[in-house]
Image 1 (cartoon, rainbow, N blue to C red):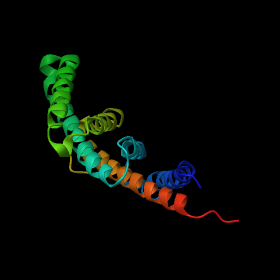
Image 2 (image 1 turned 180 degrees about the vertical axis):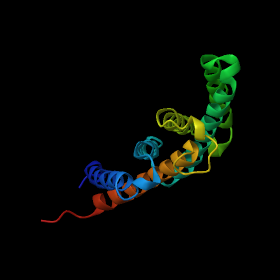
Image 3 (image 1 turned 45 degrees about the horizontal axis):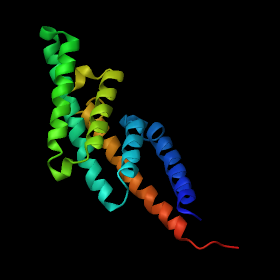
Image 4 (image 1 turned 90 degrees about the horizontal axis):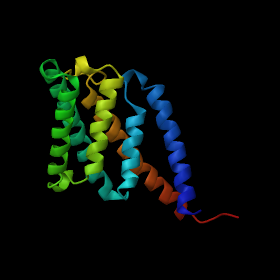
Length: 174
């Protein structure tokens, strides 16, 4: 079987199982399947392989932390500056920090940092989590929740790649 067909099988099966788990038995944890899929895609987008996890996971976590700090700053500054200016300043500073941090090899994957930032912001804003930004709860803290979801997604990327390669390496049967 060619590698693309093998990956289609491994990603399809694991994607279905992950979705079932996130919205079924593990639903009480409140993890975000969409954030897992973003990290899974980033694994492949950065070339896959053993180095991809080491490039992406730190960047996702860092970008998400910067996103959380930008949200906290926005909520603190909005009363005095107004929401549009507070959000613009907070996001602009956060984006600059992400790019400057790419000077460190562990944080050089700028797109993955942006994915982390965006996923944390999405969960906070769309999930109504602005009041719980500093909570230590898995469900309520956007950074904790999205970080766990993205780490799982990145690991699923590695598992799906390994399974796909194993399927592709199997000799054809008559």
